[in-house]
Amino acid sequence: MNNVIAVDVGGSRFRVGLFDQEGHRLLVSDEETFRSGGRDWMLQRLREQCQFMRQKSDYPVQAGGVSFGGPVDFERQRVTSLHAPGWESFPLAQWFKEALGLPCRVDNDANAGALGEYRFGAGRGIQSLVYITLSTGIGGGLICGGKVFRGKDSMAGEIGHLPVSDSGVLCACGARGCLETFCSGSAIAQRGREWAVRRPEAVARMVELSGGSAADITSKAVVQAAAEGDMAATRIIREAARWLARALVTVIRIVNPDRVILGGGVTQAGSVLLDPVRESLDELASPSIRHSTELVLAELGTNSPLYGAAALALEVA
Ligand SMILES: [Zn+2]
Image 1 (cartoon, rainbow, N blue to C red):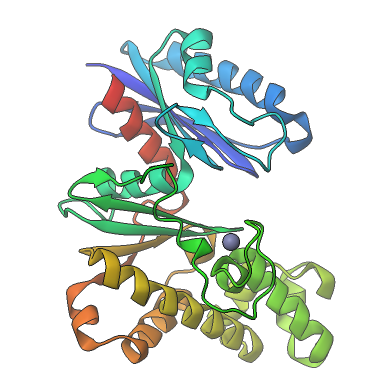
Image 2: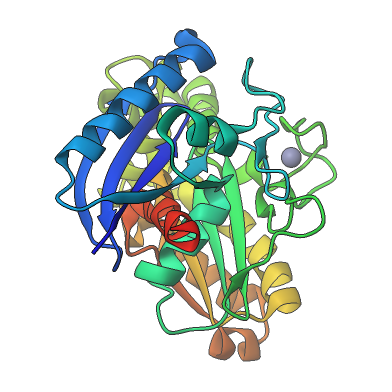
């Protein structure tokens, strides 16, 4: 018996887990990312947490896997983040090997999430899937023929940046009208705040759930209010779902996967988003699509990338 260490580096939280060979999670730490601490703080905490997991392990730890919340050049095993200072072209797998003496494999969080669901979640037993994570932004990962399909520059499956409108706002990627600007957590929160300006009387519940200020409306509050039947929140979620369904038709037409799996924080409220996405898909797509591809929620919740990191570690153990 051997164990592996899995790491999920996110913009707001980071998790380190100890897993066995079958992908069972034995132990996990979950803490907030101290953003202003930058790369040095993160690497220091990673080293400490990984050493802690190693000490707690009943069996030798053979390898590590990392899910990174930003672009990763998989071929070269480098983080290529242009948004987070200090991470540009950083050889994270090599750092891991030098700091902890363990082989390591790194991928971006969307690919890791796809792999996690494929190996241990809602994608078990099938050959192809599209995993979409809706959180602050939108990420996507593809499994084709039982393998992660990454494309030439590790950019395949980036569904969040499909252009769905030519009149949309500017996206973080530099293009205009990307799906991410219509149905990410940030976009949903922004719609809530726009409603607050136009129709302040309609957003009372969203404001209450966001701590009392209309300027602080969160996507979580919009989703929660929609789950309670709030009219304005329901309209915001239905509109977001429709944009997502439009993009999904394109993706399903190209990939024809067994399953589309929705994960990430925005989907945690279950059927609130899933049901209107299904309804819009029924409206927009031909019946053959609906019969060919299942649309389901991630089984591993917000832990899909962490399980994917464990799967990456098991590949090099
Ligand atoms: Zn974009």
